[in-house]
Amino acid sequence: MIKHIVFWQLKDEAAGNSREVNKQLVKEKLMTCASIVPGILEFEVGLGGGDLECTYDVVLYSVFADKAALDAYAVHPTHEAIKAFIGEVRSARQCMDYEV
Image (cartoon, rainbow, N blue to C red; front, top):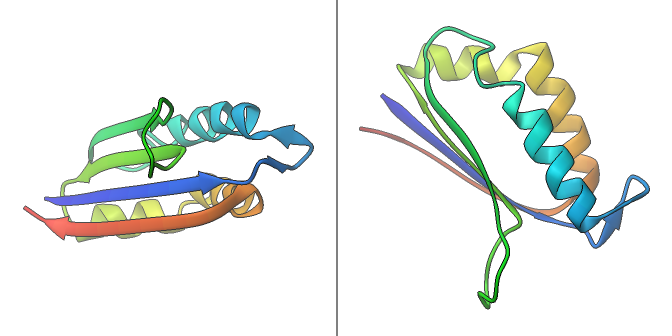
């Protein structure tokens, strides 16, 4: 299994929306990917908030059966379209994949 975790920090304003609106849009768009390819075992999107000093706005926690499933997800047209939107509204991104 491969865990794929991504964090995004969003711009204060982008694509004509506030950070808060874009947080919701990113979550909604990402959730459309939850079952786009076989081998997605877990798929969760969380939104940051609160009083933490260092935090990101959106996190994706996902688990794939194997590298082939992750690779298929990475190039799927639905995912590609969402990546373009996120690229427009994000100011920072962190990602980590690891096998378990």
